[in-house]
Every structure is written in structure tokens, then in C-alpha cells.
Length: 536
Ligand code: GLN
Image 1 (tube, rainbow, N blue to C red):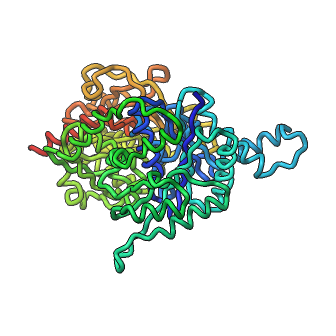
Image 2: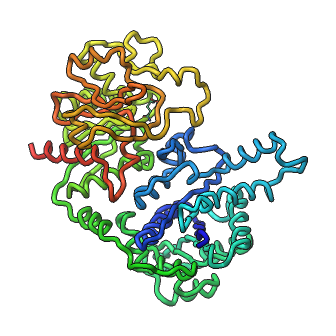
Image 3: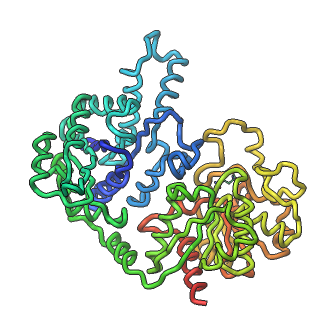
């Protein structure tokens, strides 16, 4: 069988949730027995989102193979429970970078290099890459941005060409739009959808299926109107009504028969009925919690919760596993001082200090960690959060008041967090951190071991600085132990405080690996400890 390609475009406004619709459709097709992957094409000129401030596009998600990608890839993995890779996220920057490199290499034999055909050819080549690998039967491609944007045009043109080149039954275009509701007249309006389909048609692309975001149910009359004016089958107008959780969307799409419509258009058999038992089980536990806790997430991008997307989702997975509602309170680290700590943190059952870069807000993070350590509140520090836990311990337990990370203070005598040797010669910022999967060996009987229940794990990284092993003995003599190390480089991966119910700092990012079907062991244990703490 040829690989089948499904393209998902968006119209009317941005932020309609193309990523969630793509992931939900993929989930349904996967649950029927198809091997599916999802990729995202982003129309911005950065080569990848690794150098972007989280305020721009939210969190930067990291894949196993060390690609710094759009946060939608996190949704793909959380829904499908299958890892993505570098090939699953492509930006305009990356497309141009490789076309320009080919031009420098003389690959175009004296021709003028142009958007069409050279840029569109490169886009098409990358759109087909995962299909050509023959590892997947269905490839869903989400086109970032909104139809009508200037920067989206080459992508729409590439999809048009692929649509023309491939057999009808091998390609499908799904267009996601919005039906605004006018409360004064109590009606859903279809005109913006008609216009956005018209815009696609101007580029030569007829959508096969319309998924319509709406706050109110779409009646048959409106569906008929949309079908007629947008030239699609009646059963290809799909209602996507607002739901409480993104994890309801696959069930909603199942009810709307999106998967069946897609399969029949692709001339694929429905195979078995969707096997969603585990998914439903997760949802049932998530919606019927028996316990409730409050966790403080201490970070400096808290105005934009998308900056900590994977962490928030990991709490949902671990919460459901523990049948516990996790109320996440985002707390700005710049507002935490010795004076405000009690007021800001006193009512929490657990404290998580988030990853980050640079020195804004770090003193507040250190103060929050001190509070968690002294009050024996369950604590999880991720990446920068772990590094700050090491600094806090050095300053307040070992008594080294000048202890710091050389990221913030290059002159300190107690550089307890220092740049990794291989990082010292690197000056370029893009894609140069320690990225992706590395092995970590865990000490038996440690807290981390109790969470993982194994002594060897693989976790994803994104950092330049590390625990400075010169001080290893000083830390362990006072009770902060390194309980996870990289077996090859001996880099410290996990620190914990023995004399504390749950105090763990990890140099890696466990949140990237948490999925609906595989909640992360550290998050499960952290939530469990917070539940125990809340009972005291
Ligand atoms: N800024 C720190 C480093 O580069 C931590 C990075 C992070 O939290 N992802 O090592």
C-alpha cells in the first residue's frame, strides 16, 4: 500500500487547535490498527524554535534524537505514545537553509533558484520523507499558520502539487475553521468559513473535510449550508465543539465519525473497531478524582502557561494515575522573597521549580527551594530547577554564600554548576546544547530508584551547564546525594536529599516523556508524595 497523506490546514483565526485535531485523528486511526505519524510544518524563518523565547511560541519540545521542536510535537507524542524525531518538525528557515546550501554546493547547475519550484520541491521532499521511510501507513501533516498568510503560500502550493501528483485516494485535505456565534441573534455564522475555503480554492486546493470549531452545536441545516457552499460532502462537515479537556477530543471526533470519513475517502478499511479502552480508563480516572492537591509551579514565564505545557500535561497524566486532581498554581519566581515565601508557598502540597535560562527570577527560585527543603514539602526541580537546588544547598547548608552557576556568575569560587567542557568552545546558540536522549544510571535504594523501579533509564536533555563533580564529596557529606549519573561522562543527572520525604532535582526533562498511556514515574511519585503531605 502507498503511504497515505493527510494535510491539516487552518482558516479564519489562529489557535483553533489544529495540533489537537491532528493528534486526535491520529489516535483514532492508530486505535484501529494503523501506524500513523504526525509532522508539523511551521512557516517562520527560525531554523527551529530552540532559540525562541517561550513568550513567542510557548515551550520548546525536545525529541529523543535531540531536535528542538514546536510544542505540538509534545501533543503528538502524548496522544500517540510513539516518539517523534527531527523529521517531524520543519520550518521555513530549515527549508531555505538546505536550498541555499544546495545552491552554494552548485546543485542547481546555473539555474535561477526560486520559490517555485525550488522551495516547493524541498517542502514536498520533506513532506514525503516519513512516508518514504515506509515506517508509517498514514502521515498527517499539520501546516502551521492560517490560510491567507503570506508565509504559508509555498506550503499550500506544495500541498496542491502533491494532491495533483498523487492518486486521489492517497491524499486528503482537512481544513479547520471557526464558526463564530453571534449572541445578539443567537446564530452560528458560516461566512468566515466560506471565505477561508474560497481562499484555499484560489490556491487551487479543495478541502475534502471541514472541521468546524464552535461553541454551540451545529444543526443539520448549517451543516448542509456549509457542505453546499464549500463543496464538500455533508458527512465531511465535522463539528468540533469546545470541550473541557483536550483529551476528550478523540472521543468527540469518534462520535462525529471523523475517522470513518477519512478512511472511506482514503479507500482504507475500517479494520477493527477503535481500541480505546486505556484512553477511556485514563479519562474516567481524570474526571472522577478521589483526592485533590495543590502544586506550585515556580517559573519566570508564568503569564503564558504554554511555556510549561509538557509539565502541566505530565501532571494531568500522573494525577489521573493517582486518581488525584492536581491544581497547578503558576507562581512568578520574581515575586518570591524570604518575606513573601510563607504567604506564596505555605498552602502548597508540592513545589516544582521549572527549567529556564538566564538570571531573571533565579533568587526567587532558590528561596522557594529553601522553603521546600526546610518545610519538607515535596520538591521536584527540573533542569535549571535542579541546578538551583544544588546552589541553594551549597549556600545554605554548606555555607558557601557565593555559590553559583557560571551561567549567572562566571567569577564565583564555588562554581557548583559549571559549563560542560564540550560546551566551552561553542559560541553559536542554535541547536548546540546537550540535546536529546542520554542514559542515566540510578543508585539502588535512592528515591529516584523507588520512583522508576529500575536502575537504567533514558531521558531527554536540553542544557549547557551541569553539576560540578569537584564538589561531589562536600555535597554528599551533608546529605545531598547524586543518585543518577551518565555512565559514560559521569555527569550528575539526579540529585536528592536523603533526609526529606521527596526532594529530587533532575538535570533532564522528564516532562517530555510523559504520555497518556505512560505517565512519568517521577511525576507519579511526586504527586503521590504531595498527596501524603496534604494529609498531614
Ligand atoms: N540554563 C541551564 C543550562 O543551560 C538550564 C537549562 C534548562 O533548564 N533547560 O544548563
